[in-house]
Image (cartoon, rainbow, N blue to C red):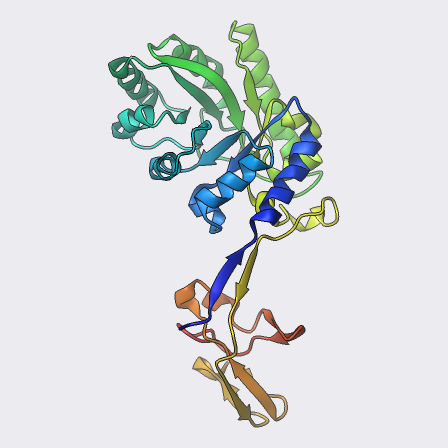
Length: 314
């Protein structure tokens, strides 16, 4: 009975992915990142739309997310972008996921699991060039790649990094990270390792640092129609895929100087009609947005007023 809903337009996702497929060209692959339930848009549906538009691989954060995609019948390569506990290695192999590796214990666990299944597992080495989250240090990356390549059942298919400030076009730290990664790639090559898939660019760098596209980009937020950062405004015809919709549930008259909702954080500047909407923070509409956003009602913008409640806002 409640009219509150989120609507996802898969044609917008196909359009956005198609823009990047055309942008990077035929020699560069597009990984569609569908972690966190496809950024809240529905992982399976978003993945299918992206693949239809020319993406060739999928990216997730959790083994469980890979399980969901496999259960839906998707057979394309699914990249696991972070290491799970070593105990999950057997399941990673069973699901034919493409694991990310940046620690030796996990690499050895994958090797044992691959050997037990008689499988050959393609892995990607993650290098921390300055994001300082996860990844092998640049000093150790070439040695780790060589060790992983020597382990039974494992093959190093890819090597990559993640850029911390790529949401800011022209950022100098991004260029420093890119240069560090290039040095790592050179060291890997000098060590005699040929790694076919090198990638550094997510949505932002794919636009602003073309040389970082290499053999693949990881398309995340822009796939869903949102800009990587304000500095990219006007660079691509991105179309937001998600709309949040509801209906006015109640209307009342408030007088000048009267307050609205918990804490009376909004005071009416004049006599006004207040519309109550059946949506609140239980639906994921953050309380932190109180008095800071707008809605469209019959094509006109109206400010949200007062503290967002659990089930309602004004």
